[in-house]
Amino acid sequence: NAGVTQTPKFRVLKTGQSMTLLCAQDMNHEYMYWYRQDPGMGLRLIHYSVGEGTTAKGEVPDGYNVSRLKKQNFLLGLESAAPSQTSVYFCASRKTGGANNEQFFGPGTRLTVL
Amino acid sequence: AQSVTQLDSQVPVFEEAPVELRCNYSSSVSVYLFWYVQYPNQGLQLLLKYLSGSTLVKSINGFEAEFNKSQTSFHLRKPSVHISDTAEYFCAVTTISSGSARQLTFGSGTQLTVLP
Image 1 (tube, each protein chain N blue to C red):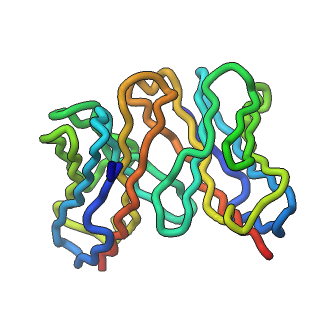
Image 2 (cartoon, rainbow over the protein chains, first blue to last red):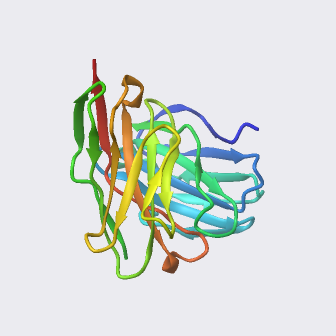
């Protein structure tokens, strides 16, 4: 099992450009999450999905859109990138059930917006 | 809503010395608590968790944490650290009211640096 994978690993954008980050998991998990990690702020939830075809907003959703067309994939889109979106982005997934089901994290995507 | 405070952003410690990383939380309902570890240039990995039962929980690599409801704390400890423990450690909380998705709320992280 590859677990949770993210592409790309690094990306540099200019202000106003768009891009899509791909998260894939091969564990048949129902739930998937996108976080951003900024220095001194820990991880903050952007959007999440409780199943194929469903998405919901997290703590910091502005400027991002997501889609979950297939159970194994969760896409994060930036329509018009801003320097404030410079961050490390992590995807995570977990299976249904109680709180004892941990979230599994991908290796991250480092995004710089100039 | 819940929140997590990690009081120390940086903790340097010499190899084989004990360490404590502090975590306090705020919530109006019952919580589940987690410690995650992030090694350089990697994603987060679950270190240990408290769901219910014994308030002292342990990891396979010698870390332990104790849930203290009266002090709303979940401090992480290790009696003797190794160079390989150098990493960033995140405390996280979720609650029953988070719904089935069990969104996690993270603290700001503590960078543990073990010195030779």
